[in-house]
Length: 210
Image (cartoon, rainbow, N blue to C red; front, side, top):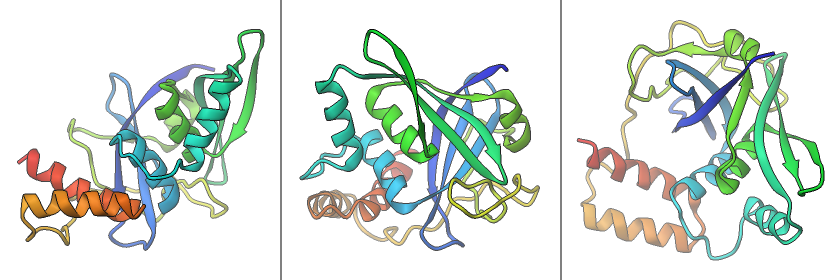
């Protein structure tokens, strides 16, 4: 089976499904996207590393990275290898220098570790064919309607429907000054309120890209 390399395109908060996030992986050099519904904790674990936030205490994935480093274990790649009943299956391809071995993983955990180890992310082509979405624009598409997207939990799902469209969600921080946003971001990180920090970070990034 052919492997397709993926990049992390974006992470968007659901405006319609409480506590849910869409992790969007994009085909490297292509226009297909693979959206996966994940929980808030998993989304925070990915966002914290991407944004290089410094939590006061190590998160679970940071602990795993430190443990692996101390025992000379490296993650060579992440592979999303199956999609059954709307649930993605992933594995970590690891090496200790002498042998290579696979470890089964939830997709969100695998991606959170990939960004920490600098490991490439791959998916088999049949999964991209079944669950991928073609995006005409190069811009990240916020997925407003998350129902029906494949998940990584126990709930079943189908491929995304044609009702999905580009959407920029309204931010509750729209009326706050830039300086106050930076202060609120630092306070949220210090208090380990990473979901709040991620939303403030999104508002800061939107203003930079105006």
